[in-house]
Each structure stands twice: as structure tokens, then as C-alpha cells.
Length: 295
Image (cartoon, rainbow, N blue to C red; front, side, top):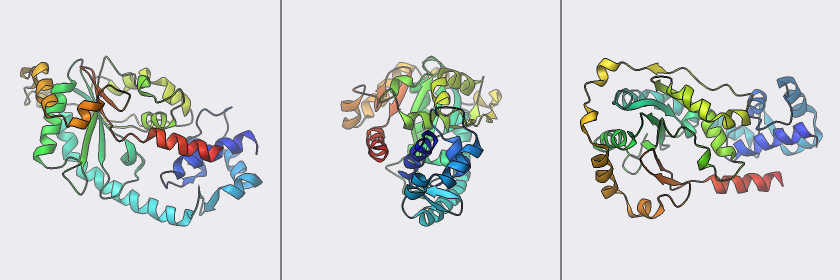
């Protein structure tokens, strides 16, 4: 097995963990830290001619993966249709969160960013704020989701998960890697889909996380987002809500598991600049599964 074949195999192995078959173009696009600037033609040739790769990676109608690729292709189509529906569901939510004072950006992440969801999949949002505004922004964002009973533990369909807030002084998320090589976080960062942006928030975010985009050099991030309308922002007098009061109110409501886990590692991070609530972080599990496949 030559170098490119191994790199193609690593990409297919990673996405197969999620039951997500890839086209040849997607294999090329998602090459992680390639040993050289391979062309799409190089990848297509390797996928079709490398004997070891053809033995271990299955192909169906131009899609590559492990196991029953035909079934995974059908599932990918079904999930794509659900994701399109979810974006329609998300529109009024983004209208609300995007107009809150202190918010500078709202992006879709995780499975919805790949258009790979089911009815029960969370709609995960990544939210950027002005300096030291994460607590007050989260208070209004999560309170509205609670009123609508759309939080993950309350909704059986299309739950809205607002679990990651970062202010403009803490755009770099490299400190939250689980290891020097964290493919999940690199893909997560590169695949963010900004829906709302003010003052170049996601431009600054990408500049602070060049490591992720260097890891997947063939990928071009989505940069188009809706602009803010400042006049509407004045309808929400968030500036009168003291950040310390917002923090005190929310910390009082934290489940015991969150209180016990906060700042122990990268799963749950709680401070005045970053709020990250990923208590069910599966990155270690994914990294081990990928290492086993590559071995």
C-alpha cells in the first residue's frame, strides 16, 4: 500500500465510523495533513487501481466506505433530506439568537454541518460573542429554547443544542484538543457553517484556528453568512443584564454532573470567555476506533 492509498484509507475509515460514505472528490477534500499536494486525479486513480485499497474499501455508485456501502448511501440520502428540513426549522431560532446584543456569530456544527441527521439529531449551534458576554448571551439563548421546550432533553424531534459559546478574546480552540492530533476537532472546525456574522467574527475565528484548516488543505470553508441588522438588536436591552448576575443564575441551575465535570478536562469548560458543555464527548472513542482501523 503506497502513501496516498494509506491516506485515502484513513479518510474513509474516519467517515465510515459515522456511516458516511464518500465520493472520490470528498476523499480528496478531506485528506488530513496529506504528505504532498495530491490532485483529485491522483486520488481517483488510487481508489480505482490500488489493489490493497480495492480489497479493503468498498465502492457503490461512486461512493466509498466500509461494510454495506449501498445501505449507507441510502441512509446518507435519507439523512440529507432530513437535514434540509432541519435548516427550515432552524431559521426562526437563528433569527432570534443572531439578533441578541453581544452575539457576533452563529454557526451550525456537527452532524447538521454534514447534512447527515435524523429527526432525533440535535441541531448543534456554535455561538461567538463580544468580549465577556458569553453568560448573558447564553442566558437569553437557552431560556428561549427552554420556553419552547426545544432543548435536547425536552424535545423528541429537532432539539436545539446551544452548548458552545466563545467570546472574541478566546477564538482559538486549539487548547481543547484531546491530543496533538485531534482529527475530530480539526474537521469540526473546518466544517462550521456560519449562518450569521457581524464584524468579521468568523474571519477572526478562522485566523485564530489556522491549524485546523492546515490539517485539511483541500477543504474550502463556508464563508457566506447573513449580516446583522443593528437597529433590530436594540429591541433586546441585553446590556442591562449584568454578566455576573447571568453567571450566578445559570451556575445555580447547573446539573450536578456539569458542576462535577467543569474544567476537569476539555469536555466541560466554564469561565467568563468560553462555555463548552460537551459532557458526552466521544473524541477518545473515535480516535481509538480510527487507530484500530489504521493498525
